[in-house]
Amino acid sequence: MTRITVAKGDGIGPEIMNATLKIILAAGAKIEIDEIEIGEKIYLAGHTSGISDESWDIIRRNKIFLKAPITTPQGGGYKSLNVSTRKFLGLYANVRPCASFYPFIQTKHPVMDIVIVRENEEDLYAGIEHQQTDEVVQCLKLISRPGCEKIIRYAFEYAKQQNRKKVTCFTKDNIMKQTDGLFHQVFNEIAAEYPEIENEHWIIDIGAAKMADTPEMFDVVVMPNLYGDVLSDIAAQLTGSVGLAGSANIGEECAMFEAIHGSAPLIAGQNVANPSGLIQAAIMMLNHIGQNQVAEKVHNAWLKTLEDGIHTVDIFKEGVSREKVGTQEFAQAVVLNLGKKPSVLKSVQHLNNYTLKLPKYRRRARAKKVLDGVDLFVHWNGTDANELANKLQRLEIGGIKLNVITNRGIKVWPDGFKETFCTDHWRCRFRPQQSTEISKIDIATLLTRAIDEDIDVIKTENLYSFDGKVAYSLAQGQ
Image (cartoon, rainbow, N blue to C red; front, side, top):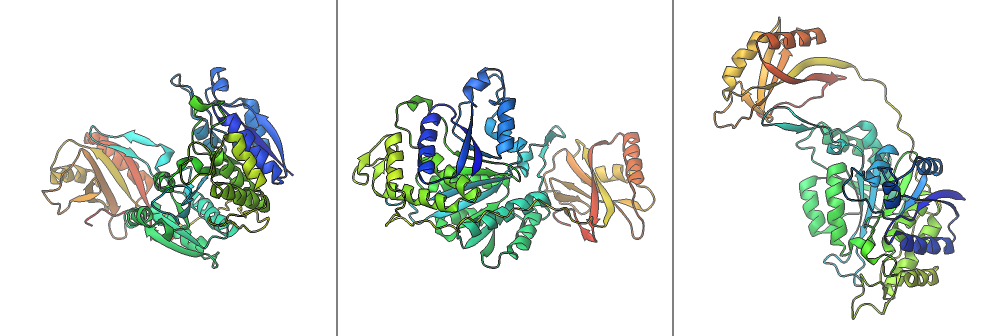
């Protein structure tokens, strides 16, 4: 028996949650429920995240959270509860199955059945941004080994549990060799632990094009945060009905399961809402806690109900649908189909009672870290890199010399092209020559000399090698 936290939310939330719970309990789900109140009422009571401290305590104690949609009031500095939950609870994996249900739901891709597994915490979504000069702002792309290992292992464990045959990785490591390169490297390492599952890697641009054109080529797809955010929405749209999709947010300690649609207050209380998205989320929850046979029973019954043409108003179509029903009537139809399987749509089969094996990250032994040099980022309004180089060479100390100047990643000194357009943001690399070494004291000396020469250094970046491997990018053109 697993104790879970349930929130019925706002708008259509209570209706679709009641329908969902009715189905999974009838299917034999071994759960005990603690209900909490979240959403609009809690926001307006003064909790800016839409949840009370007591409710946080219940979620953290039970670890499993099944959540209906909520309404976030407009204005007033109210924070997204979804974002808060993901960040506070460390929910590193966003999992979104995107399948077609043709011919019962119209789509241009009738055999599509993809699961997008998206990293949920890092990448550009860390939200670390700075304006550095009049013309240039930066956003830091953070990719960590723990983040990569957790999300990629989850993708393979999910594929194993769901009897899926292939895991695909999307990155752009032909350009971002350090960040996306690490993601690809860890993918290869973990893929080797699952020889029974096919693995492949695609560069994100051609991979996305293939997904949009031929989604049946893919099965489980794992990728960093930004790519996953974009492609999960594209994949859901390709199926023909975003409203049927559920999603999971998985962490090392806790997990949250929800529909991907909103609270739809205009149709609340009318018994017309489609509970399918939350049903799909509940199926994912049951799989997560190891109740795979119950999940399989609910999933197949839901597919059989779609196939029988028993549809809510949002998907009802003359000539395809047989009966237009309300929320609770749809739920009752699913209950009556428990134990049955679809005959046109593909039935689902999971590994019986297989709980995903997701060990906590274990830090590796520290590598030998050597300081190779330093990049000084300079705000300078000139346009001639040779003039800037003359200024910077006054900073040189001992054998530590100016090595290269770049602008937006392109080498502009030495031997730059006059046609290269330059902004006011310059990366100026200092490296030791031959056997000379560089220390952090040397970097401090360079910065002191820059102050004396009235050179505006806006940030520095130390250049390191780890176990003899260079761990920083070279300039384009070097």
